Length: 136
Image 1: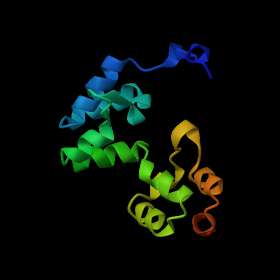
Image 2: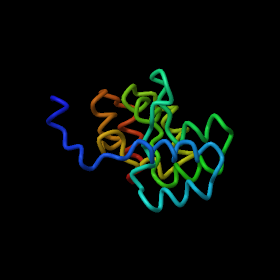
Image 3: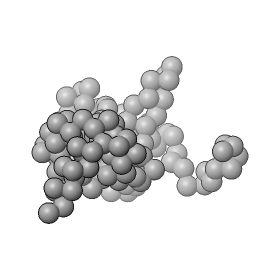
Image 4: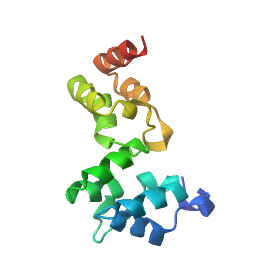
């Protein structure tokens, strides 16, 4: 796909994304207000220089801001490791993440794909069986 074929009218303003990521380093109130205003920010990231991409969840994590991190996850921030581990059939890791953050099971991954989608794409039989057991 050529970049010119993309519909960019609905993209996030990079200054806003930068403000959001910087706020997630220590300003819980600002993070809440910004997510309320534009929930699309929740998984946005920006280049902090030299190809060093950072999301608000990354910022909260490296600054020890557990309250901000938990809020972002509750609001739908992706736990990217979860989808990778689902695809790789790392069932123990998937189980541990979902035990800690049950709502992550329903959070869409990249491009809106479900956790089950990643597991199916990887032929992850153990993860698929585990996810099916949760549906009971």
